[in-house]
Image 1: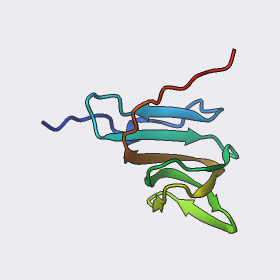
Image 2: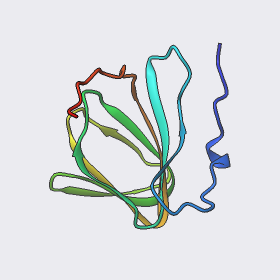
Image 3: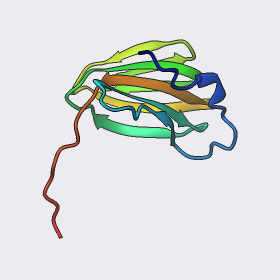
Image 4: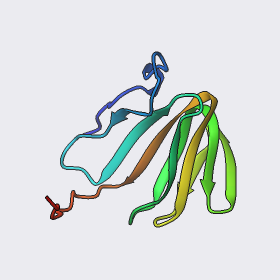
Length: 116
């Protein structure tokens, strides 16, 4: 049965002063993971290598840049992007901040052995 999860218009930019997850898919069981990420003006997610899944990114509001290696691509509200698995990426918000939705295959948490 379909579920109405949220309305992205309702996720306002009020009082955003740090990188934040504004919403995430928590229903179980599920085959997808999804988040709405909000970056304030000039906020960023530093360069990293994506995991074992492809990621679909939909820019909901604002503008910014997505970097990947030698590519630095401007993005704005309405843009839909595909980030291939294992790709290098960084995300930087413009002067008006950046809100975006990510969707990818659900990954079960993995067990790790921590060092004391």
